[in-house]
Image 1: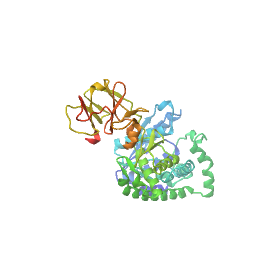
Image 2 (image 1 turned 135 degrees about the horizontal axis):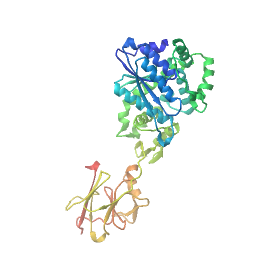
Image 3 (image 1 turned 120 degrees about the vertical axis):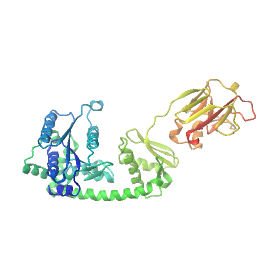
Image 4 (image 1 turned 90 degrees about the vertical axis):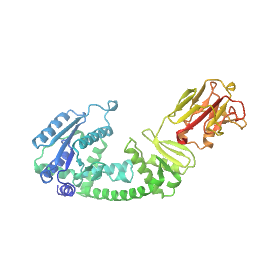
Length: 443
C-alpha cells in the first residue's frame, strides 16, 4: 500500500474529518485499515458509512460485521437501510443516488473534508473499457478520477493505485477480516463479465496494467481541464439566459462546439436527471446547421429545440391547454395581462377597441389550437395563427401557451401584441370596449 499512503500523505492535514463508504468487502476493509494506519499521525476523525440496499439476506450479517469492527476500533458508525425503490424495483442508478445522498448528509453532519471510496485499479480498467464499448465522451473516458472536487468537500479514491490482487495480499498480511458479496461473481452484471473475462487477459499481458490505465485517465483529465478552461472563457458570450446563441457558437471549431454543448449538458445534469448518448449529441449538432425551427426529443423528458438564432436544451413543457372567461381583468400564466380600460389614445397591437353589438358574449382567452385562423384587419381572407407566429418570429415553445382572445362562438378577435382581427375599431369608429394587453417582458 505504498502508493496509496504516499498519495494520502500529500493530501491529509491535521484534524481532518473523513467519511468512508464501507461495505465490509475486501476493498472497503482495505481502505478502512489504510486510513486507520494514518489516524494517529493526523488525528483523523473517521466516520464509517454503511448502506444496506435491502437486496440480499446476508446484508444484516454484513452490517453487524462492520458495526462490530467500528466499535472495537473506536470509529463512528453510521447506517442506512434502504427499504424501498421506485416501482418496487431496484436500479443501480437509484441505489447510487440514495447512497451518495446518505454520504452528503454525513459530510454535512460531521463537517467532513473528504469522502473516500474503495474504488481500485481493476474498477478503473472496467469503467474505462465499458465506456469505450458503450460510447461516451472525453470526460467519460477518464473513468474514475483519483480526486473529485465538490463545493464543500472532495471525493478521494486512494486505492486506484493498486489492483485487486494487491488488496487481497494486503488483507492477508495484515490479518484483516472481510465479507464476500457472492453477487460479484454473477455474469448477470456487465461489470462482472468484464472482470472475469477481460481483466485476466490484460493482467497476463502486463501485471500492473491498471497503472497504465491510471496514466491514461490522468492524461485525459489534463486535456479535459484545458478544454473546460477555454470553454469558461467563451461561454458567457455563447450561452445567455439559458439559450445558446447559434451565430456565436458556429464561429467556433466544430470540436469546440461539441464540447460547449457537453459542458452545458453537464451543468444541467448537476440539477436534473438527464442521460444523453452520442446519437443525441449528434442530433443537437445537426440542429445548428439546419436553418429551421425544430424540436427533437432527447431523453428523460428533455428536448433540444431551435428557435431562429437560439438553441435551447431544456425539460419538455407540456403544451398549455387553457380557456378562461374574460370580464374585466385577468392574468394568464403569471405573465400575460388583460384588462378593460376606460380610455386610451394609443394605436398599436397592445390595445383593441371593440363594438359589443358585433360580438357574442362571454369573451374568452385561450391558448392556440391546431388549425386556428383569423380574419386579419386590412387583409383579404383569413390567416393561420401559426403563420402569424412564424411571421412575428414567436419562440416555438411560447406558441403553445400564447393567449388569444375569442368570443363565445370561438371567433378569434385578437392575437395580442401581434395582429388584430376585423372586429378591431379605429379610434374614430364606434366602440364601447377597450382592452389593454401587457406581458411581463414588456412592462
